[in-house]
Amino acid sequence: MLFSSMIILAAAGGTTGFTTTTSPPPLTSILLFTNRHVHYSSSSLFSSTQAQGYLDTLATNKEAEETYANNFWGVPRNENEIIDFVSEAVFNGVSHHDAASSALNDNVAPTIDQYLQRIEVISEDPPLVIMHGFLKPEHCDAIMNAVLGPKESDDNGQIAKNKLKRSTMGVDQDESNHRTSCTAWLHPEHCPEPLDVFSGRVSNLSGLPTKNFENLQVVRYQPGQEFQIHTDHMDSFNDMDCGGRLATCLLYLNDGNDETFTGGETLFHEFKRAVSPRKGSALFWWNTLERPGSKDYDKNMFLNVDMKLRHAGLPVLTGEKWICNKWLHPLPFSFGVKS
Image (cartoon, rainbow, N blue to C red; front, top):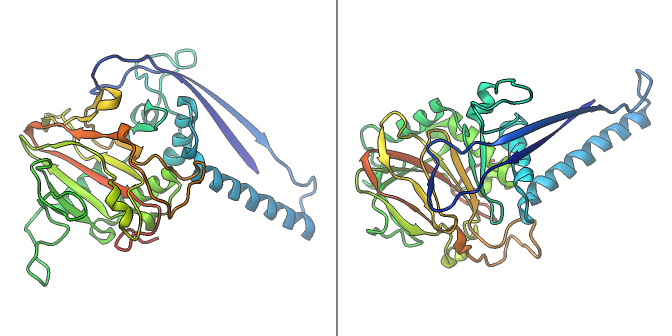
């Protein structure tokens, strides 16, 4: 059996003031690959004892890998550890760097996947990560198309959840000038393959099962619309049966590179970073001070909001901006994604 390990060393220059990620800052990456063969027997035939030992070893390794994934974010990690983990969890171990024009390993040019699927660590602790190429462009288009078209009504005459309507806020779902976009909710049957890929990658990334996820919220911002500074978790969310919103994965469905829209950056005030939307790129962060794997964490505990992860959707200046959100809970979400 062949095991492969990959170490990625990345060094990025710091920034001061507000920056925009229209084109990500250069990264210098060194990729070191080592392979080791593990032989359980010199014979081509296993005895029953050897076979059982082999299976037990596989089971132990799998359990250890799952425990590591489930608890990875519970302790502070450095940039290299985060990049390595996300590479494995999201992109199946494809190597990553952020230097399209820089030499790599004696002037070997980066592959298309290496260029398109890049990982940026905005903050190590609390973790805040950008993953470029998180979802294919055609999957992004399919998600947008699933909420467009003639508005449908349910049996009570209400607009169907998979069609756009005025955004709301909080447990009581109130309309507010604080948030002026339109939203729709997509269930797996509305857009099967893209939603399945999205949920699977978020599960691998977070270590949480998909049954703990809310359905996908799709959001459209038109000129002048915004979401002022806020947190995705609130104390009142702890009263829900599924617990509070542990984490967020925000995916950009279109970008301004093709002049679709201008403005609409996602501002993280604590880190002085305004992230420019890029189609298929995703942001991931934990909304609470407590995270799986952290000391004394319990899925039934009261979750406290991490104010460092306050963020805002800046006003769109021209055109339409499209994003979608996947919110994660410590316990199963009754109307969420089914495993």
